[in-house]
Image (tube, rainbow, N blue to C red; front, side, top):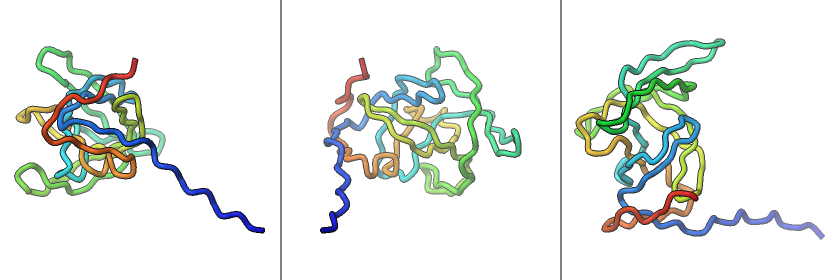
Length: 152
């Protein structure tokens, strides 16, 4: 008798607030104050001096990050995942470089796409878009913030 393939089990539901502190451990960025924005499709990280380059016949991108006014500016490099047109907060499409990296919230981690853009005029150095939360059983409480705890 043939057996049916096992159904993939969902992780337990994680409820997060509209503001959370998240980690991007592959970039060594931790406790980033992020706005959870289900109205945005793609996540975006504040970055400046964004310059693509080639390393070993692979496209990479170098960029600078300063998450808070009193934090030092650091230079990071990552393989370039894509370059695409993404609408900014004013609804105007702009070409952005996109990287893939691990995203962690409340001790749960998974890969996400993150666009790099200058967010210096925004309140949050990062927004987490709905595609980063899709398929991870995450609910966003729109009236509460800081519902998760950092991993111990």
